[in-house]
Image (tube, rainbow, N blue to C red):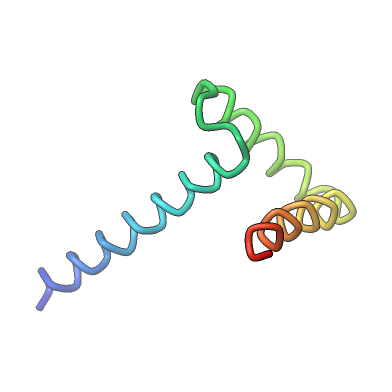
Amino acid sequence: MKQASQSEARKKDTREKIQLGGLIAKAGLRYEKRALLLGLLIDAASRIKADDTERNRLIAIGEKAFSDDRD
């Protein structure tokens, strides 16, 4: 039982990582250096914690990108 639970947790973790990688590709950053990507994410994380306006602006950009795919 414990092994099945661990296997499911690994599958869920793998799926999440694949989806996150897809976001990097969707943003057009597939070929950027990993250090740059991490720097962007760390900077964005600090900015959205401090500024709701910035958070909402970035959410709007992301939602538009997703809706463009559906069209």
